[in-house]
Image 1 (cartoon, one colour):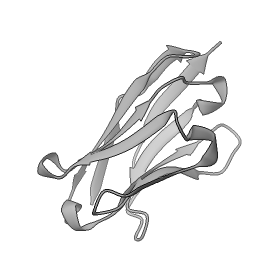
Image 2: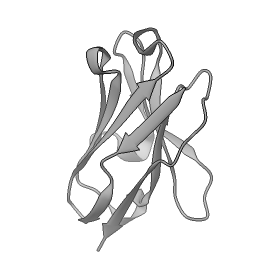
Image 3: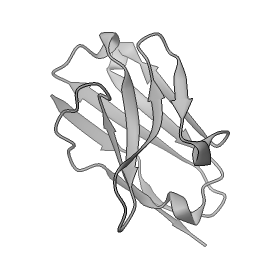
Length: 113
């Protein structure tokens, strides 16, 4: 399985970014997918999850600001991030929440004040 996350960058507080993750080597449409993040000095945490039927769940600090979506035709899962805050700074990864694949490089999001 390969997970190619992209879309990170440097943004000011209050800004927005859209992350993408292209998945190959696994049956994308049958799986739930999730976005995770690891901030400096912290453990990796689950940020948002979308099931195979499109139900979503979010970590409390991102509710109302982040939105996870999926495009089964493109084997891609997205994370739209709005009203970004400094503490959202982290490397963001996507993965299968039920059977983790290799995490890959992730994509770095830096929010500056």
